[in-house]
Amino acid sequence: MAGKNESTHEKGDRAWRRWIRFLERCGMGTDPFLDSLPRVNERVLVGRSFVVEYRVSSFDPEGRIIARRPVPMVSATVRDAIGSLASAFRKYGRLSPFHLEGDGHESGGSLHYRIEDLVQGFENVDLQVKKQKALSPLFLRDLNSFVKDKSLRWKVTSDLIIGSFFFAMRACEFCRTEVQGRTERLELQDLEFRDSHHRILPQTKRDLEERARLITIRFRNQKNGYKGEKRTMNMSGDNILCPVKVWARIVQRIRVKREDPAVDLAGVNEFIESGRIKEISSKQVLELLRWSCDEHEGEQRYGLRSSEIGTRSIRSGAVMSLALQKGASDRKIMMLGRWNSDAFLEYIRPQVLVTTGDTARLMTQTASFRDVSDCDWNIARTNKPSHFGAAHRKEE
Image 1 (tube, rainbow, N blue to C red):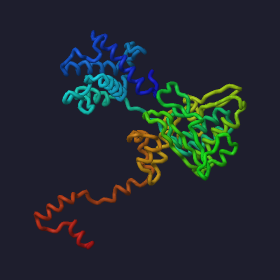
Image 2: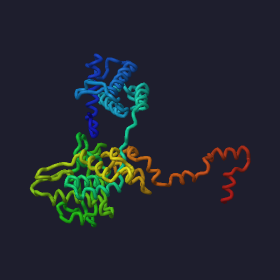
Image 3: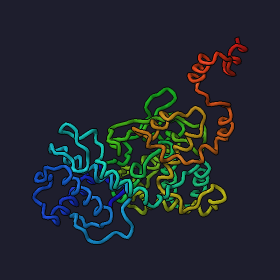
Image 4: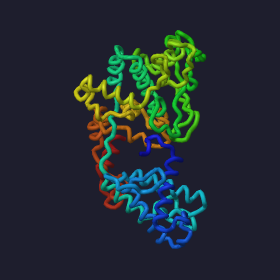
């Protein structure tokens, strides 16, 4: 099974292996770029056949079909595979069998209408994907209290969850995941603390949590391909939900309060237990989130069940918390989560409009949708005063 955090390169390799095995079964294994098929309709036919088979098949690591999928692959994954294969064709100066042609080149990356119709049909019958619900600040406060009498493992996990919330992090950025992919996990070297005069504070200071006023995190490599991006947060003024305090606590636990100073820890998700270095994993993050939700009767208290929570709930909660604040622009949300597009909208639940409580009032403010230009045309033609003209003269 492909991992969530698999890199674009790995996805492309996987799609290419499956494409080659498909062509081998068609007797075209020696012609991966379909050079023997000069006619567009023939190439598109091969592309359509591959797309249909790709959607309903399970494959081995070498790309061979091993079974029919009990549930067809979602259309978005099929589109990703098509895009990966098209990139391979372009890389070697060939035309994609999935896209339109224009003047000898692909026409702006547009799918051929026969391929587009096919994938659109898949979208129409796809099962609705369950989105993970967002975690609220109240949930995080309860989580912090919940782990106070728990083991070190759960205290570290809680701090990582709260710390990652303020930077809208993906799980692969702050804990170990099954497939790491391109994204690099945070290490101590990626954290920088400053005091009230903006002077850098050594991480080994025992009073780091008391003196730090700013925390800067450097993301060495990300899913979006950008390297070395930095984000800075100042203190929130909250003793529990404060990015500076929680990250300082994480660092102090590793740098200062560890059991054996001779043991060198680097990752922010590492800790010492029984003399051994251990790591917090995404499974443990999910386990703690659901455990705390059940203990606090989440459906009554937060409006969500534990089964509706995932590691993406942290990132979603960050977006929701910012989106609900007056003056929060799309640009600010994109900056927080390091998005290059409006993809962050996937993390905002429809309840945002309801929670603001202002939607119904705003929708009643405009009395008419009359086109002013059309109104002027009527005035000129009939030479009769309009309501718009009368109101305008009254104001004068």
